[in-house]
Length: 586
Image (cartoon, rainbow, N blue to C red):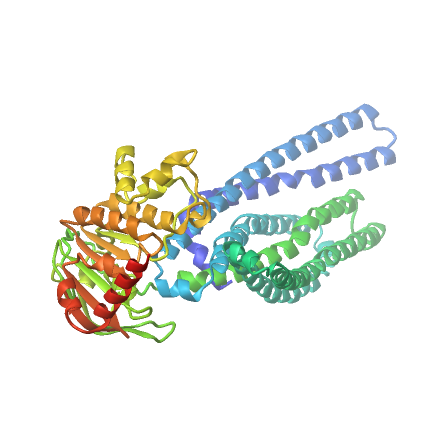
């Protein structure tokens, strides 16, 4: 139960619903006691009538009728109270589920890039869905039936002891054996449930990855191989799930056996006590049988409750593993300061923790407000890392990044990211309309603004050629569009944000040179008063920048203007001549 203590804050938050549920449970159980008492009274009255022939039959019929009406009335009241008990506690569990899912989602948003590199999407989805559902079953049904069991057991056994302590003692003899059995079986359930949940995460991750890469699988004709891998994971999942089910299946027969033994004890011991005169009314035996059967469901539910608690414990442990992770990138201030756009790197060195690759080595440069900086270099030279550090997706290891002369760590993180329009290398689009994907950069933008930025990104004509135009719904990750179209929609999304800083990470790699030239001309006008950093492999994207830096193996090996760099030997001139010759050949 240690892991489930994390949920105590929710019980405090919903304490009024929780306490009301307890009170209703107690009231429902009190009304349930009337039936055995009324049955006892009816049997005893019948016995007296049979033993005393002078009694009037009409009196007996009247008494039995009254008892029948009382049994119906108290049962109905108990049923209504049970309904409200469920409404109170189960609804409370849904509120807890809502809060917990939101807490997990906020944590997902706050966790840094390194976390997502180390964890698979399917596993994270499993924790926010299946694991949370198992926790909800603990907060709702498990807690509700536990309260019901405790209250009913205490009320019934207390009443039984008042009537006949000796018969009660004999009746409850099987309970210690039951408690020991539940402890042993629950321990095994916890172990097997944890293994099953871990396997389920693997299965979810595998499935999600296969769906995302289905085009590659089909292109390489790997359907059979992947089907075999999925079958193996599924068989393992079934095996682990069946192992949990087999242990769970032991509860039912065990409960029925022990309840049956208790009934036999009541009949035998109670009968002997009636013969010996220790019990003067045979109705007491019937009353005890009803009490034992009232305990049947609470006792039988112990196994189910225990199973739910153990599974919830295993799930909450998995949830706690990342809820307790402190994001590496923290918002260190609540003060709001407008970001103007002057950026400086001062002797920055950065190493990725997950790969131990040093992406930047003692890098220094400065970009003034309104200037455009282009960064070129071979793959893996550290270009995208610079953009990640400006966005504070990571924090520097040594050296310092400053915004408007202030250490970037001391700038409000939300203000910083609100001041950046970012076009990533991998143009990610959501499964929504094209218009909403563009408005993602500014949800308050009007249709005219959407069309305007689409024209500047040279994607308007493509969009209007679709049947539903801007209302066209894109497939997952924007699969409906070509690579170049996705990049241009992503550029439009960044432009509509109209932020003072614009970061473009090789975002024109999938468009032809003519379209690239048109977009760059539009960007030149659009970025006139913005700080712009362009990462590219093409000289054409960099030539109009105020300054160009060349990275190699994480170090700056060249920097200057386009004219200065093509006049000196080095990487930039070689790249310029190579791409110039390729252009002439086209």
